[in-house]
Length: 303
Image (cartoon, rainbow, N blue to C red; front, side, top):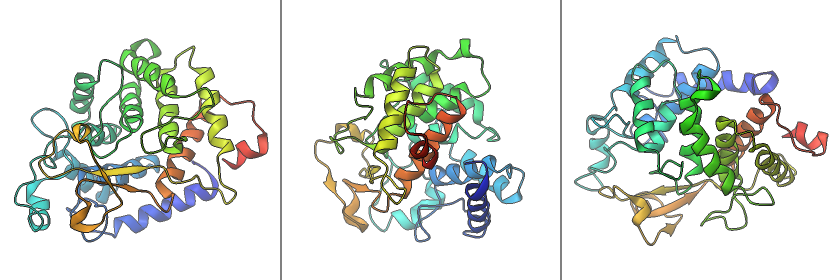
């Protein structure tokens, strides 16, 4: 949210994050784990949104993410030189975690100041699935990387140059049900997290016939907002094994295990922060695109 208390909170968060780690360590999931390119990319997305990309701390972050570029043109989550001292205490090899990941690449590709930005766009074009989606490593919901990839590939391009995004938008629009919800394996009654990113993917593709899907998704999201302003947690993160290159092939995932036992499990955004932030971002993009539902104005304003 670019104005008012939202911006003030974002500025405060950036100032806090600048002091959270050493200048060459990137940022990580929590203080106990090494920095990774995924979390660092999201911190840098905040910096760019605030116009702070020239800050020396952001400059260090760009170098950190660029160092994770792999030979295939994608970005890995971790590098051995940063993560091995921590990860090797759990298992002797982490080849899959050191390989490039489509969901991390799509998040990093949204950084316009990243030195390897164009290479990431090329990689995303190469690995888009025939159905228009992108795979994810850390997330069971493909809506997440699909939206981020489509947005990165369309940034600064004319509508006629959006073939990848149009394919992504068609896939995402088909995922939005008649009631506006995206249903997933882990959220069969409807996932606010997946719906938010499906909505963003449809917006990125600018499909002339996508407006109905957009309106349905927005209406469902607004109607499902909790009274205190959040959305029910539905962002599930998965933790593949250290040699598990394709987590989509795993038949069984455990729920909510922690520590070393987290490998092979899915973990819910129990505080609803990630889910809520994702929905707010999607609704803000919808408002900027001037595509609004026939919904009660007061609820829309709240969202």
